[in-house]
Amino acid sequence: MTRVHIQDLSIRFGSHEVIKGLDLDVHGGEFLVLLGPSGCGKSTLLHSIAGLNPVSGGSIHIGGQDMTHAEPSQRGVGMVFQSYALYPTMTVKENLAFPLKMAKTPKAELERRVAAAAEMLQLTALLDRKPGQLSGGQRQRVAIGRAVVREAKVLLLDEPLSNLDAKLRTDLRRELKTLHGRLGNTMIYVTHDQVEAMTLATRIVVMHQGVIQQIGTPAEVYDRPSNLRVAGFVGSPAINRIDGRVGEGGRFESPTLGIPLPAALAGRPQGEALTLAVRPENLRLGEGLPFAGEVQLVEPLGNQHVVWLNCAGTPLSAVLPGQPEVAEGARVGFGLDAAKTLWFDAAGERLPT
Image 1 (cartoon, rainbow, N blue to C red):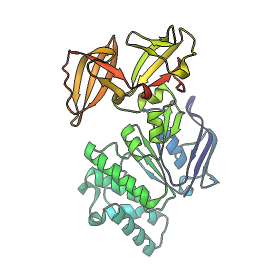
Image 2 (image 1 turned 60 degrees about the vertical axis):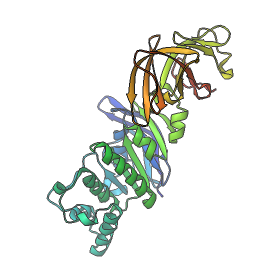
Image 3 (image 1 turned 180 degrees about the horizontal axis):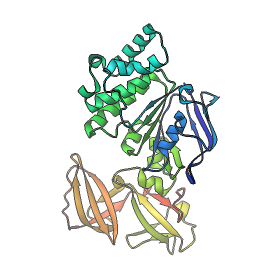
Image 4 (image 1 turned 120 degrees about the vertical axis):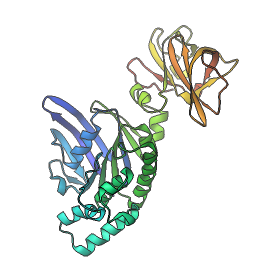
């Protein structure tokens, strides 16, 4: 199991600094997901690990060896791109075998590796077909297989599912998770899709403008986000935000609601700006609850519904099981699960409660 250690990494393109003094330790054998919006630097970081981008400062160690300025072929990594990058005139078998031929792998070993990868990725029956005869999911499996046959100790995947339809993405997510369990190698995966991150990752690295915002397990990132940026990016629908201030008597006051502050925050100075955040599944609707809002929209999602409220100008969403008995335009009561609320200071940093 190969560890990837990145220390004080900086990457510039001209005067623009894309990665800013980044430190990251990828454990051997883990499935690490780099998550963030477009332009946050996640693909740039991945390409730098692969040796495709020059490094402006810092170091990259792979398997204990300094690979900061090594050629891509010397790094022992396999790369899977968003575009399949298959050779259209070659068969599936020839595409799989191509990197091994370039490395002058003995024929018997080449055949063994190609057959093993094809069986693992359910491509055995397709070995004689060309990419034009394959579905999108099959092509992506071939692209993954081409990295797998190299028996790379580190597998880098740059948004490999983004070109597929929803069902294929779901199917291939499951296959990738199973593949990681079989191979046991280190995988670093780039995506802007939080569902992919939550379902695939051993740990998630949330990035913004070239800076790591938080590193943690999917549960840690979801339940205990380090700041408002992470809280707002992870979760769908997005977390509800209510801006207010510390009022008299240790209360949180806003046009939307007023509640006592948690005991850990009771000593905050009066007038300080705070943000209360609560996940949509932790917002309840019903009669007799302390607050009220007007139903703006009800979104049916099969086994659950999302109800959107307008509460004194603040939009809030609630995820409810089954078929809620609410109508658009109605005024409904709502309450919060106090144990599941999150609190942030004026700078957007989470406050311990």
